Length: 274
Image 1: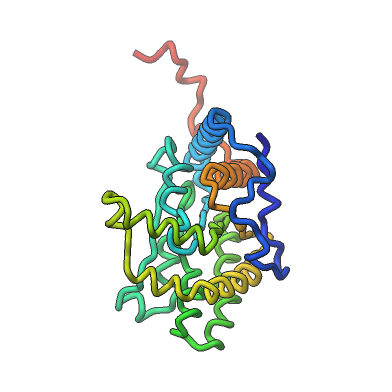
Image 2: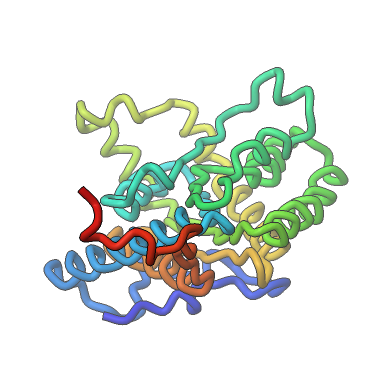
């Protein structure tokens, strides 16, 4: 079962249309539950191995950015991909509406504080991209301010990558009909009622405005150093495999290594310890 993340990568500066991308695409791979389970388990194990090396090395970090429309599956993606990974070297940050303290500063201030330190894998559940998505759709900033933010975000991410933080960004792509089915499910199941927010219906009414905002943002900010991937997210098994494979590929390219001991091993033969 070979997954090719490159098929879903957004080429820098190249225009694309979300509605031309199938949110249920699986690259022609047919689901085999046992094979999928074993493949995902192997990918998670590889992430855990590489994360241990990353933590021990403490010279690099990895930032994973997740964006999606409501019900896109960010939470379940995080659970599926990070299961079994040492939490000591991993953290998740969620960016909700900014506080008054945060609004008194530039929009990237609160984000910069949450960038993973060297040795860590950090995951952003929503991110600084909200400031060119929801802010653009609702007109909370002028078109001139939004336009400037694309370059500012690229500069910000260039700063991070130049100082040791690798960035990989995923937009979990679903259809409007799929979103409707997930919203209905939240009302049909008592254990999902807590996830339903009537405000989501107001955002749903702006679906096509959001699609346009995503298209512009991804086109303007997918770079060689911090690429965007549009992940077909309606088949969760494929979504999980694709994201896990991309993270493995990225960590292997970073090639973290265990540091050499800062003492003379010859002075401490294992059999001498009592």
